[in-house]
Length: 474
Ligand code: UD1
Ligand code: CA
Image (cartoon, rainbow, N blue to C red; front, side, top):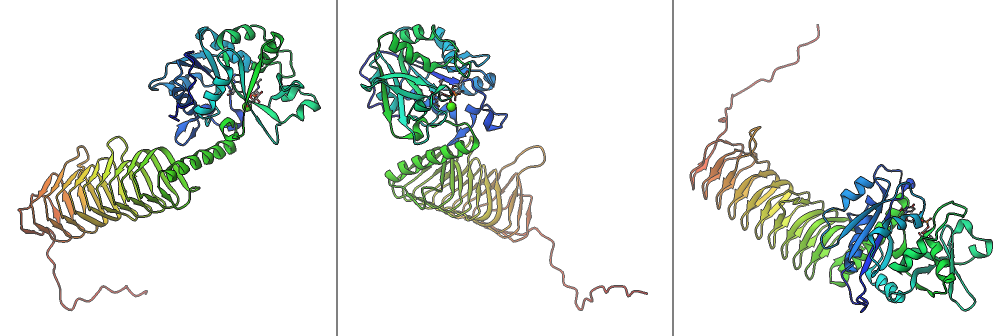
Protein backbone atom coordinates (compact mmCIF):
# COMPACT_ATOMS: atom_id res chain seq x y z
CA UNK A 1 0.00 0.00 0.00
CA UNK A 2 3.00 2.30 -0.11
CA UNK A 3 3.54 2.74 -3.84
CA UNK A 4 2.94 6.33 -4.83
CA UNK A 5 4.54 6.00 -8.24
CA UNK A 6 1.41 7.03 -10.05
CA UNK A 7 0.70 10.02 -7.83
CA UNK A 8 -0.75 12.73 -10.07
CA UNK A 9 1.58 15.66 -10.67
CA UNK A 10 -1.31 17.95 -9.91
CA UNK A 11 -0.81 20.02 -6.81
CA UNK A 12 -4.50 19.68 -6.09
CA UNK A 13 -5.11 18.38 -2.56
CA UNK A 14 -6.94 15.07 -2.21
CA UNK A 15 -9.73 14.87 0.36
CA UNK A 16 -11.18 11.42 0.95
CA UNK A 17 -14.78 10.77 1.99
CA UNK A 18 -15.46 7.32 3.45
CA UNK A 19 -19.06 6.16 3.76
CA UNK A 20 -19.40 4.02 6.86
CA UNK A 21 -22.87 4.74 8.23
CA UNK A 22 -24.66 1.67 6.91
CA UNK A 23 -25.96 -1.03 9.17
CA UNK A 24 -24.54 -4.21 7.72
CA UNK A 25 -27.63 -6.23 8.64
CA UNK A 26 -26.43 -9.32 6.82
CA UNK A 27 -23.36 -9.63 9.05
CA UNK A 28 -25.79 -10.57 11.87
CA UNK A 29 -23.30 -9.14 14.33
CA UNK A 30 -23.25 -6.65 17.19
CA UNK A 31 -19.97 -5.33 15.81
CA UNK A 32 -20.43 -2.52 13.27
CA UNK A 33 -19.71 -3.95 9.82
CA UNK A 34 -16.69 -1.77 9.05
CA UNK A 35 -14.97 -3.00 12.22
CA UNK A 36 -14.91 -6.62 11.12
CA UNK A 37 -11.37 -7.60 10.26
CA UNK A 38 -9.38 -8.75 7.29
CA UNK A 39 -5.76 -9.66 7.86
CA UNK A 40 -6.18 -8.58 11.48
CA UNK A 41 -7.15 -5.01 10.54
CA UNK A 42 -10.65 -3.52 10.54
CA UNK A 43 -12.19 -3.11 7.08
CA UNK A 44 -12.31 0.63 7.70
CA UNK A 45 -8.65 0.62 8.73
CA UNK A 46 -7.72 -0.82 5.33
CA UNK A 47 -9.57 2.07 3.70
CA UNK A 48 -7.90 4.61 6.00
CA UNK A 49 -4.50 3.11 5.20
CA UNK A 50 -5.27 3.45 1.49
CA UNK A 51 -6.28 7.09 2.07
CA UNK A 52 -2.98 7.61 3.89
CA UNK A 53 -1.00 6.18 1.00
CA UNK A 54 -2.82 8.60 -1.34
CA UNK A 55 -1.30 11.27 0.87
CA UNK A 56 -4.78 12.63 1.30
CA UNK A 57 -5.03 15.98 3.06
CA UNK A 58 -7.77 14.52 5.21
CA UNK A 59 -10.30 11.73 5.41
CA UNK A 60 -13.88 12.47 6.39
CA UNK A 61 -15.56 9.35 7.76
CA UNK A 62 -19.35 9.33 7.63
CA UNK A 63 -20.70 7.37 10.57
CA UNK A 64 -24.18 6.39 11.67
CA UNK A 65 -24.81 2.86 12.87
CA UNK A 66 -22.42 2.20 15.77
CA UNK A 67 -20.97 5.68 15.26
CA UNK A 68 -19.34 5.96 18.68
CA UNK A 69 -17.65 2.60 18.34
CA UNK A 70 -16.56 3.24 14.76
CA UNK A 71 -15.16 6.68 15.58
CA UNK A 72 -13.30 5.33 18.63
CA UNK A 73 -11.77 2.55 16.52
CA UNK A 74 -10.33 5.12 14.11
CA UNK A 75 -8.30 6.91 16.76
CA UNK A 76 -4.60 6.35 16.87
CA UNK A 77 -4.10 6.66 13.14
CA UNK A 78 -0.85 8.30 12.38
CA UNK A 79 -0.21 10.64 9.53
CA UNK A 80 -3.78 11.03 8.35
CA UNK A 81 -6.02 13.90 9.39
CA UNK A 82 -9.39 12.41 10.34
CA UNK A 83 -12.74 14.12 10.63
CA UNK A 84 -16.14 12.61 11.30
CA UNK A 85 -19.59 13.50 10.02
CA UNK A 86 -22.64 11.80 11.48
CA UNK A 87 -25.43 10.68 9.20
CA UNK A 88 -28.62 10.04 11.13
CA UNK A 89 -30.87 8.67 9.75
CA UNK A 90 -29.28 7.03 6.68
CA UNK A 91 -31.15 8.28 3.64
CA UNK A 92 -28.82 7.03 0.95
CA UNK A 93 -25.30 7.46 -0.39
CA UNK A 94 -25.98 10.98 -1.72
CA UNK A 95 -27.33 12.02 1.65
CA UNK A 96 -24.24 10.45 3.26
CA UNK A 97 -21.82 12.52 1.20
CA UNK A 98 -23.93 15.64 1.82
CA UNK A 99 -23.02 15.29 5.50
CA UNK A 100 -19.33 15.56 4.60
CA UNK A 101 -19.66 18.76 2.56
CA UNK A 102 -19.00 21.20 5.45
CA UNK A 103 -15.63 19.44 5.85
CA UNK A 104 -14.59 19.82 2.22
CA UNK A 105 -12.74 22.87 0.90
CA UNK A 106 -13.27 23.99 -2.69
CA UNK A 107 -9.69 23.37 -3.79
CA UNK A 108 -9.88 19.59 -3.36
CA UNK A 109 -10.45 16.65 -5.61
CA UNK A 110 -12.72 14.43 -3.53
CA UNK A 111 -12.32 10.65 -3.62
CA UNK A 112 -15.42 8.82 -2.39
CA UNK A 113 -14.77 5.40 -0.84
CA UNK A 114 -16.78 2.93 1.23
CA UNK A 115 -15.66 1.68 4.62
CA UNK A 116 -16.67 -1.85 3.67
CA UNK A 117 -14.55 -2.07 0.50
CA UNK A 118 -11.12 -2.86 1.91
CA UNK A 119 -8.85 -4.00 -0.91
CA UNK A 120 -8.71 -1.06 -3.30
CA UNK A 121 -5.14 -0.27 -4.28
CA UNK A 122 -3.77 3.25 -4.07
CA UNK A 123 -2.45 2.98 -7.64
CA UNK A 124 -5.96 2.35 -8.92
CA UNK A 125 -7.16 5.49 -7.17
CA UNK A 126 -4.26 7.52 -8.55
CA UNK A 127 -5.33 6.45 -12.04
CA UNK A 128 -8.90 7.46 -11.23
CA UNK A 129 -7.78 10.86 -9.95
CA UNK A 130 -5.65 11.28 -13.05
CA UNK A 131 -8.70 10.47 -15.18
CA UNK A 132 -10.66 13.15 -13.35
CA UNK A 133 -7.86 15.59 -14.06
CA UNK A 134 -9.10 17.52 -11.07
CA UNK A 135 -11.93 19.03 -13.12
CA UNK A 136 -14.16 16.13 -14.17
CA UNK A 137 -16.30 13.53 -12.47
CA UNK A 138 -14.47 10.20 -12.83
CA UNK A 139 -16.13 6.87 -12.02
CA UNK A 140 -14.36 3.63 -11.22
CA UNK A 141 -16.20 0.93 -13.17
CA UNK A 142 -15.88 -2.69 -14.16
CA UNK A 143 -17.68 -5.32 -16.19
CA UNK A 144 -19.47 -7.94 -14.16
CA UNK A 145 -20.76 -11.23 -15.52
CA UNK A 146 -23.62 -10.95 -13.04
CA UNK A 147 -24.28 -7.27 -12.42
CA UNK A 148 -27.40 -7.85 -10.29
CA UNK A 149 -27.77 -5.23 -7.57
CA UNK A 150 -25.25 -2.78 -8.96
CA UNK A 151 -25.69 0.61 -10.57
CA UNK A 152 -25.32 0.24 -14.36
CA UNK A 153 -23.17 2.57 -16.43
CA UNK A 154 -25.34 3.90 -19.22
CA UNK A 155 -23.37 5.23 -22.17
CA UNK A 156 -24.36 7.25 -25.22
CA UNK A 157 -23.83 5.87 -28.73
CA UNK A 158 -20.43 7.62 -28.84
CA UNK A 159 -19.39 5.88 -25.62
CA UNK A 160 -19.76 8.90 -23.32
CA UNK A 161 -21.12 8.13 -19.86
CA UNK A 162 -24.72 9.38 -19.64
CA UNK A 163 -25.97 8.10 -16.29
CA UNK A 164 -25.78 5.53 -13.55
CA UNK A 165 -29.05 3.63 -13.25
CA UNK A 166 -29.56 1.77 -9.98
CA UNK A 167 -30.57 -1.86 -10.39
CA UNK A 168 -33.95 -1.39 -8.77
CA UNK A 169 -34.78 1.55 -11.06
CA UNK A 170 -33.45 -0.04 -14.24
CA UNK A 171 -35.44 -1.22 -17.25
CA UNK A 172 -34.77 -4.73 -18.55
CA UNK A 173 -32.58 -3.23 -21.28
CA UNK A 174 -30.57 -1.29 -18.69
CA UNK A 175 -30.28 -4.39 -16.52
CA UNK A 176 -28.59 -6.14 -19.43
CA UNK A 177 -25.67 -3.69 -19.16
CA UNK A 178 -22.69 -5.42 -17.60
CA UNK A 179 -20.59 -2.36 -16.83
CA UNK A 180 -21.29 -1.35 -13.25
CA UNK A 181 -20.35 1.50 -10.96
CA UNK A 182 -17.92 0.27 -8.29
CA UNK A 183 -19.07 2.76 -5.66
CA UNK A 184 -15.81 4.74 -6.00
CA UNK A 185 -15.51 8.13 -7.69
CA UNK A 186 -13.19 11.14 -7.89
CA UNK A 187 -14.83 14.52 -8.28
CA UNK A 188 -13.84 18.17 -7.86
CA UNK A 189 -15.24 19.50 -4.56
CA UNK A 190 -16.93 22.52 -6.13
CA UNK A 191 -18.84 20.42 -8.65
CA UNK A 192 -19.75 17.86 -5.99
CA UNK A 193 -21.27 20.59 -3.84
CA UNK A 194 -23.21 22.02 -6.77
CA UNK A 195 -24.64 18.66 -7.83
CA UNK A 196 -25.44 17.34 -4.34
CA UNK A 197 -27.61 20.40 -3.77
CA UNK A 198 -29.87 19.16 -6.58
CA UNK A 199 -30.50 15.62 -5.28
CA UNK A 200 -33.97 14.29 -4.69
CA UNK A 201 -35.28 10.87 -3.70
CA UNK A 202 -37.74 10.30 -6.51
CA UNK A 203 -36.77 6.71 -7.12
CA UNK A 204 -37.89 3.21 -6.29
CA UNK A 205 -35.95 3.12 -2.99
CA UNK A 206 -36.87 6.71 -1.93
CA UNK A 207 -33.18 7.29 -1.26
CA UNK A 208 -30.83 10.13 -2.12
CA UNK A 209 -28.53 8.49 -4.65
CA UNK A 210 -24.99 9.79 -4.95
CA UNK A 211 -25.04 8.24 -8.41
CA UNK A 212 -27.61 10.80 -9.61
CA UNK A 213 -24.85 13.41 -9.84
CA UNK A 214 -23.79 11.77 -13.10
CA UNK A 215 -27.03 12.96 -14.69
CA UNK A 216 -26.55 16.46 -13.34
CA UNK A 217 -23.02 16.60 -14.75
CA UNK A 218 -24.29 15.52 -18.15
CA UNK A 219 -27.15 18.05 -17.97
CA UNK A 220 -24.57 20.73 -17.17
CA UNK A 221 -22.76 19.75 -20.37
CA UNK A 222 -19.79 18.30 -18.50
CA UNK A 223 -17.84 15.28 -19.55
CA UNK A 224 -18.04 12.27 -17.17
CA UNK A 225 -15.20 9.78 -17.49
CA UNK A 226 -15.00 6.14 -16.49
CA UNK A 227 -11.83 4.41 -15.41
CA UNK A 228 -12.57 0.75 -16.00
CA UNK A 229 -10.66 -1.96 -14.15
CA UNK A 230 -10.80 -5.76 -14.37
CA UNK A 231 -9.78 -6.76 -10.84
CA UNK A 232 -13.11 -7.22 -9.03
CA UNK A 233 -11.43 -7.87 -5.68
CA UNK A 234 -10.36 -4.22 -5.51
CA UNK A 235 -13.95 -3.00 -5.45
CA UNK A 236 -15.60 -5.92 -3.69
CA UNK A 237 -17.59 -4.97 -0.62
CA UNK A 238 -18.30 -6.97 2.50
CA UNK A 239 -21.96 -7.50 3.27
CA UNK A 240 -21.95 -10.97 4.80
CA UNK A 241 -19.65 -13.41 6.62
CA UNK A 242 -19.22 -15.32 3.36
CA UNK A 243 -17.95 -12.21 1.56
CA UNK A 244 -15.72 -11.39 4.53
CA UNK A 245 -14.12 -14.83 4.32
CA UNK A 246 -13.74 -14.57 0.53
CA UNK A 247 -11.94 -11.24 0.79
CA UNK A 248 -9.81 -12.58 3.65
CA UNK A 249 -8.57 -15.34 1.33
CA UNK A 250 -7.99 -12.85 -1.50
CA UNK A 251 -6.05 -10.63 0.87
CA UNK A 252 -3.99 -13.51 2.23
CA UNK A 253 -3.20 -14.79 -1.23
CA UNK A 254 -1.89 -11.33 -2.06
CA UNK A 255 0.32 -11.39 1.05
CA UNK A 256 1.54 -14.89 0.19
CA UNK A 257 2.47 -13.83 -3.34
CA UNK A 258 4.37 -10.78 -2.11
CA UNK A 259 6.31 -12.99 0.33
CA UNK A 260 7.14 -15.52 -2.38
CA UNK A 261 8.33 -12.71 -4.64
CA UNK A 262 10.72 -11.76 -1.83
CA UNK A 263 12.04 -15.34 -1.87
CA UNK A 264 10.04 -16.92 0.95
CA UNK A 265 9.21 -20.58 0.33
CA UNK A 266 5.63 -21.30 1.28
CA UNK A 267 4.53 -24.92 1.33
CA UNK A 268 1.09 -23.73 0.25
CA UNK A 269 0.24 -20.07 -0.40
CA UNK A 270 -3.41 -20.88 0.26
CA UNK A 271 -2.63 -22.02 3.80
CA UNK A 272 -0.96 -18.98 5.34
CA UNK A 273 -2.49 -16.23 7.47
CA UNK A 274 -0.70 -12.98 8.17
CA UNK A 275 -2.64 -10.70 10.52
CA UNK A 276 -0.02 -8.04 10.96
CA UNK A 277 3.44 -7.43 9.50
CA UNK A 278 5.63 -10.36 8.61
CA UNK A 279 9.10 -9.50 7.39
CA UNK A 280 11.42 -12.22 6.12
CA UNK A 281 15.08 -12.36 5.20
CA UNK A 282 16.34 -14.71 2.47
CA UNK A 283 15.75 -18.44 2.48
CA UNK A 284 12.89 -18.52 4.93
CA UNK A 285 10.56 -21.46 4.60
CA UNK A 286 7.09 -21.73 6.09
CA UNK A 287 5.09 -24.93 6.20
CA UNK A 288 1.30 -25.10 6.03
CA UNK A 289 -1.28 -23.54 8.33
CA UNK A 290 0.87 -21.00 10.13
CA UNK A 291 -0.60 -17.78 11.54
CA UNK A 292 1.51 -14.66 12.05
CA UNK A 293 0.22 -11.73 14.10
CA UNK A 294 1.52 -8.33 15.13
CA UNK A 295 5.11 -7.66 14.08
CA UNK A 296 7.10 -10.80 13.27
CA UNK A 297 10.62 -10.79 11.84
CA UNK A 298 12.14 -13.99 10.48
CA UNK A 299 15.89 -14.01 9.91
CA UNK A 300 17.82 -15.63 7.11
CA UNK A 301 17.23 -19.35 6.70
CA UNK A 302 14.58 -19.58 9.41
CA UNK A 303 12.29 -22.56 9.04
CA UNK A 304 8.77 -22.60 10.46
CA UNK A 305 7.05 -25.96 10.81
CA UNK A 306 3.40 -26.66 10.16
CA UNK A 307 0.65 -25.28 12.43
CA UNK A 308 2.64 -22.63 14.27
CA UNK A 309 1.08 -19.44 15.67
CA UNK A 310 3.68 -16.70 16.00
CA UNK A 311 3.02 -13.16 17.21
CA UNK A 312 5.24 -10.21 18.10
CA UNK A 313 8.52 -12.04 17.83
CA UNK A 314 11.96 -11.85 16.30
CA UNK A 315 13.33 -15.20 15.12
CA UNK A 316 16.98 -14.91 14.26
CA UNK A 317 18.93 -16.54 11.44
CA UNK A 318 18.87 -20.28 11.09
CA UNK A 319 16.43 -20.94 13.91
CA UNK A 320 14.05 -23.86 13.41
CA UNK A 321 10.54 -23.67 14.82
CA UNK A 322 9.08 -27.17 14.80
CA UNK A 323 5.35 -27.84 14.25
CA UNK A 324 2.60 -26.78 16.66
CA UNK A 325 4.65 -24.14 18.42
CA UNK A 326 2.88 -21.12 19.92
CA UNK A 327 4.87 -17.93 20.34
CA UNK A 328 3.25 -14.70 21.52
CA UNK A 329 5.42 -11.82 22.64
CA UNK A 330 2.41 -9.51 23.19
CA UNK A 331 3.82 -6.14 24.33
CA UNK A 332 7.19 -7.37 25.66
CA UNK A 333 8.13 -9.38 22.60
CA UNK A 334 9.92 -12.67 22.19
CA UNK A 335 13.39 -13.20 20.74
CA UNK A 336 14.62 -16.54 19.47
CA UNK A 337 18.37 -16.52 18.91
CA UNK A 338 20.23 -17.72 15.86
CA UNK A 339 20.32 -21.44 15.34
CA UNK A 340 17.86 -22.19 18.13
CA UNK A 341 15.56 -25.22 17.94
CA UNK A 342 12.05 -24.68 19.26
CA UNK A 343 9.24 -27.20 19.59
CA UNK A 344 7.38 -29.20 18.54
CA UNK A 345 4.59 -28.13 20.93
CA UNK A 346 6.59 -25.37 22.63
CA UNK A 347 5.14 -22.19 24.10
CA UNK A 348 7.11 -18.94 24.27
CA UNK A 349 5.39 -16.12 26.11
CA UNK A 350 6.10 -12.39 26.55
CA UNK A 351 9.65 -11.57 27.54
CA UNK A 352 11.17 -14.88 26.48
CA UNK A 353 14.65 -13.86 25.27
CA UNK A 354 16.56 -16.80 23.90
CA UNK A 355 20.11 -16.30 22.75
CA UNK A 356 21.82 -18.39 20.06
CA UNK A 357 21.47 -22.16 19.90
CA UNK A 358 18.94 -22.53 22.67
CA UNK A 359 16.82 -25.68 22.54
CA UNK A 360 13.23 -25.64 23.75
CA UNK A 361 11.42 -28.93 23.37
CA UNK A 362 7.91 -30.26 23.60
CA UNK A 363 5.53 -28.97 26.26
CA UNK A 364 7.98 -26.40 27.57
CA UNK A 365 6.65 -22.97 28.55
CA UNK A 366 9.00 -19.99 28.80
CA UNK A 367 7.87 -16.59 30.10
CA UNK A 368 9.81 -13.43 30.98
CA UNK A 369 13.03 -15.41 30.98
CA UNK A 370 16.42 -14.95 29.41
CA UNK A 371 18.28 -18.03 28.26
CA UNK A 372 21.93 -17.64 27.33
CA UNK A 373 23.68 -19.37 24.46
CA UNK A 374 23.38 -23.12 24.25
CA UNK A 375 21.02 -23.63 27.18
CA UNK A 376 18.38 -26.35 26.86
CA UNK A 377 14.98 -27.24 28.27
CA UNK A 378 13.85 -30.13 26.17
CA UNK A 379 10.82 -31.67 27.83
CA UNK A 380 7.74 -30.76 29.90
CA UNK A 381 9.05 -27.77 31.83
CA UNK A 382 8.25 -24.23 32.99
CA UNK A 383 10.68 -21.34 33.12
CA UNK A 384 9.10 -18.10 34.38
CA UNK A 385 10.89 -14.95 35.58
CA UNK A 386 14.26 -16.66 35.29
CA UNK A 387 17.77 -15.83 34.08
CA UNK A 388 19.43 -18.89 32.66
CA UNK A 389 23.17 -18.93 31.92
CA UNK A 390 25.07 -20.54 29.07
CA UNK A 391 24.97 -24.30 28.50
CA UNK A 392 22.44 -24.94 31.27
CA UNK A 393 20.52 -28.19 30.99
CA UNK A 394 17.07 -27.94 32.49
CA UNK A 395 15.51 -31.35 33.13
CA UNK A 396 12.17 -32.77 32.18
CA UNK A 397 9.30 -31.81 34.42
CA UNK A 398 11.19 -29.06 36.28
CA UNK A 399 9.55 -25.75 37.07
CA UNK A 400 10.30 -22.38 38.57
CA UNK A 401 7.82 -21.65 41.36
CA UNK A 402 7.91 -17.95 40.59
CA UNK A 403 4.64 -16.78 42.11
CA UNK A 404 3.94 -16.78 45.83
CA UNK A 405 0.31 -15.85 45.35
CA UNK A 406 1.02 -12.13 45.56
CA UNK A 407 4.39 -11.40 43.98
CA UNK A 408 6.60 -12.82 41.26
CA UNK A 409 10.19 -13.67 42.14
CA UNK A 410 13.23 -14.39 39.99
CA UNK A 411 15.18 -17.58 39.64
CA UNK A 412 18.82 -17.28 38.58
CA UNK A 413 20.46 -20.35 37.07
CA UNK A 414 24.11 -19.67 36.43
CA UNK A 415 26.20 -21.07 33.58
CA UNK A 416 26.69 -24.84 33.21
CA UNK A 417 24.14 -25.77 35.86
CA UNK A 418 22.42 -29.12 35.37
CA UNK A 419 18.91 -29.25 36.79
CA UNK A 420 17.65 -32.84 37.04
CA UNK A 421 14.14 -33.97 36.27
CA UNK A 422 11.08 -32.94 38.19
CA UNK A 423 12.69 -30.21 40.29
CA UNK A 424 10.82 -27.29 41.86
CA UNK A 425 12.91 -24.12 42.14
CA UNK A 426 11.19 -21.91 44.70
CA UNK A 427 12.02 -18.31 43.82
CA UNK A 428 13.76 -16.15 44.71
CA UNK A 429 16.67 -18.54 44.41
CA UNK A 430 20.07 -18.72 42.71
CA UNK A 431 21.75 -21.90 41.48
CA UNK A 432 25.52 -21.35 41.45
CA UNK A 433 27.55 -21.93 38.30
CA UNK A 434 28.41 -25.47 37.37
CA UNK A 435 26.21 -26.97 40.09
CA UNK A 436 23.95 -29.98 39.77
CA UNK A 437 20.48 -30.34 41.23
CA UNK A 438 19.39 -33.91 41.88
CA UNK A 439 16.17 -35.05 40.25
CA UNK A 440 13.03 -34.55 42.28
CA UNK A 441 14.52 -31.78 44.45
CA UNK A 442 12.56 -28.89 45.85
CA UNK A 443 15.12 -26.11 46.04
CA UNK A 444 14.34 -23.34 48.50
CA UNK A 445 17.85 -22.03 49.25
CA UNK A 446 20.65 -20.84 46.98
CA UNK A 447 22.97 -23.62 45.86
CA UNK A 448 26.77 -23.19 45.86
CA UNK A 449 28.72 -23.27 42.58
CA UNK A 450 30.02 -26.66 41.58
CA UNK A 451 28.02 -28.56 44.24
CA UNK A 452 25.51 -31.37 43.94
CA UNK A 453 22.38 -30.23 45.70
CA UNK A 454 19.64 -32.71 46.55
CA UNK A 455 16.52 -31.83 48.46
CA UNK A 456 14.07 -34.69 48.63
CA UNK A 457 13.00 -37.43 51.02
CA UNK A 458 15.65 -40.10 51.35
CA UNK A 459 14.77 -43.40 49.75
CA UNK A 460 13.78 -46.13 52.22
CA UNK A 461 13.34 -49.82 51.37
CA UNK A 462 11.46 -52.18 53.67
CA UNK A 463 12.34 -55.77 52.95
CA UNK A 464 9.72 -58.45 52.22
CA UNK A 465 6.88 -55.99 52.26
CA UNK A 466 3.52 -57.62 51.82
CA UNK A 467 0.95 -55.44 50.17
CA UNK A 468 -2.42 -54.92 51.86
CA UNK A 469 -5.07 -57.39 50.67
CA UNK A 470 -8.70 -56.72 49.90
CA UNK A 471 -10.97 -57.63 52.81
CA UNK A 472 -12.88 -60.79 51.80
CA UNK A 473 -16.65 -60.35 51.56
CA UNK A 474 -18.44 -61.99 54.45
C1 UD1 B 1 -24.02 1.68 -4.38
C2 UD1 B 1 -24.26 2.48 -5.65
C3 UD1 B 1 -24.27 1.52 -6.83
C4 UD1 B 1 -22.98 0.74 -6.89
C5 UD1 B 1 -22.76 0.02 -5.58
C6 UD1 B 1 -21.41 -0.62 -5.56
C7 UD1 B 1 -25.66 4.32 -4.94
C8 UD1 B 1 -27.03 4.88 -4.92
N1 UD1 B 1 -25.51 3.16 -5.56
O1 UD1 B 1 -25.14 0.83 -4.23
O2 UD1 B 1 -24.43 2.26 -8.04
O3 UD1 B 1 -23.02 -0.19 -7.97
O4 UD1 B 1 -22.80 0.95 -4.48
O5 UD1 B 1 -21.27 -1.39 -4.38
O6 UD1 B 1 -24.74 4.94 -4.45
N2 UD1 B 1 -24.02 4.22 3.19
C9 UD1 B 1 -24.06 5.22 4.12
N3 UD1 B 1 -25.22 5.89 4.31
C10 UD1 B 1 -26.34 5.62 3.61
C11 UD1 B 1 -26.31 4.58 2.65
C12 UD1 B 1 -25.13 3.91 2.45
O7 UD1 B 1 -23.06 5.52 4.77
O8 UD1 B 1 -27.35 6.28 3.85
C13 UD1 B 1 -22.77 3.51 2.98
C14 UD1 B 1 -22.89 2.02 3.22
O9 UD1 B 1 -22.59 1.72 4.58
C15 UD1 B 1 -21.85 1.46 2.28
C16 UD1 B 1 -21.83 2.45 1.13
O10 UD1 B 1 -22.42 3.63 1.63
O11 UD1 B 1 -20.58 1.46 2.86
C17 UD1 B 1 -22.60 1.95 -0.09
O12 UD1 B 1 -23.93 1.72 0.31
P1 UD1 B 1 -24.75 0.48 -0.24
O13 UD1 B 1 -26.09 0.49 0.37
O14 UD1 B 1 -23.94 -0.73 -0.17
O15 UD1 B 1 -24.90 0.93 -1.77
P2 UD1 B 1 -25.61 0.12 -2.87
O16 UD1 B 1 -27.06 0.31 -2.76
O17 UD1 B 1 -25.08 -1.26 -2.87
CA1 CA C 1 -23.24 -2.39 -1.55
